[in-house]
Amino acid sequence: MSFASTRDFWKFRRSVLRESRHIFSDEVEKFLDEVRATCEKRIKSLPPNKQLWRAQIGHSWWFDKELDDSRPCPYDAERMKPPPDKAREGRANPKGIPVLYLANKRETAVSEVRPWIGSIVSLAQFTTEKELRLVVCTEGLDEFPIYFEEPAPEEIEKAIWAEISKAFAEPVSPSDEVAEYAATQILAETFKKSGADGIVYKSNFGDEGHNIVLFDVNAVNQLSCSLVDIKKIAINISDYY
Image (cartoon, rainbow, N blue to C red; front, side):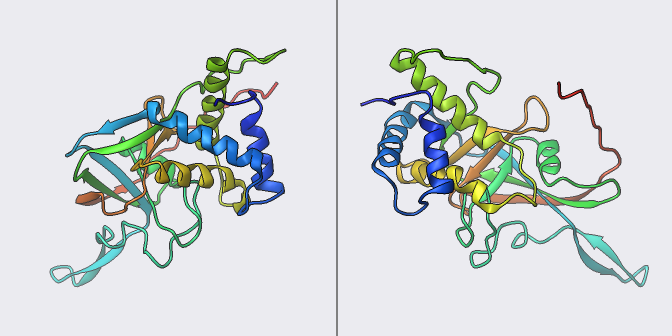
């Protein structure tokens, strides 16, 4: 069994976006079966005591008796994880099913929440409690091959996983329709059912920045939380054509 075409991912995406999201066609089922069959070789272990970061715009308050005034303080540990009954829609989870979005670098975590200049951000440091098996979706992001005929099965598999990586890394904004998450949500559920603990995908902020999604929000322990102030945001533009 192998992927049939380099277009299989786009057929899958179109099907779950425009045709049927909860009862899959035979073609989609075959695609997901092959994803399950090929994801194992893309799983890497994240060791215990690995430090990860998570940011949220905003802060709490505490009363300073010496100043007789309230001062900003970081959100508490409970606030730095998604509430189990109020999880928002995300690229790796539907509404109501919490997962934990983290980053490998503090700057990446802060950038991912898209703060504005002058905003105060609560930045928490976490550590992994045990070894975690993560599906690494970072391959082929800079490759845009054009095929005039279907290549060998190995090349088709490589092309499909490059499209999966690009889908997870694709920039999104709060104004995007939640339906656009359908393909990556289904893939994340497929990885989870295959025994993975989470996903690694490329961040659009920084060359070495990666995002980590953990299916179990309690797989990490919070070490600390501090406030950071956004002083500057750099933007680099170029002509589209």
